Length: 260
Image (cartoon, rainbow, N blue to C red; front, side, top):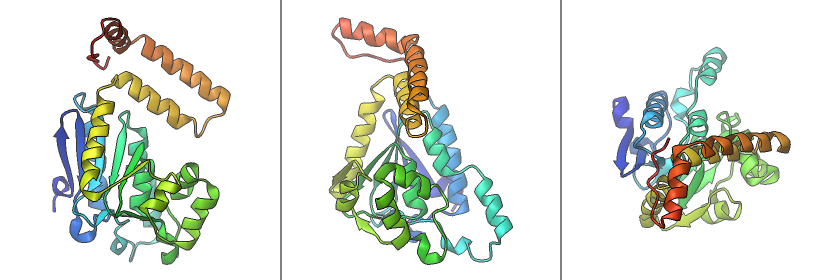
């Protein structure tokens, strides 16, 4: 398949629906899909008409079942080092100024789990399964799993998943706060798109600033985080979105944020 076929993009109002489309391989991430996804994210980041992004997997079996293991065979240390130095889909998600929602509709393993961890909000179907099974291949998570997973569910729970390679179901993922919501498979995508549209109705300037500040909270000392929050608050306060938001509130009408 061409790059445009392995990652599908559909616009639903102000929400972009991105579908990882290798259902015959359980949407496993290979080099072609990674490159296509980076291109899609770059395009969506520059599209002012898109204010939220939802990512899901094609079919009903998998969100992303991990990396394409067939690519590992024959790859030497130098090739792997160069591959790891390339920009990754995971960083692209975190650094996007737009909110990204994962609609996890099946197996979410390895690199697929790492992609979900880099999203801002994770919703799961009741049939979803999660895991970091890399230890079974004699390797460790290499796309941020050892760093992002403990930040989300705590070190002990993260080590249990990483060291055992075991899979957990959606109920356990919800208990661990790995996901924010669990829905019936047939209701998952509708809920994710509705959540995306709710966020898209807010000020893009404020949403982007809120994402940046909240993401930074995991890595900054409190004093530094508060300084960043103050700077971003001032940016929002000087925006046309703030003018429109205040005016709409006083006039008792819905705001129509220009995103400026």
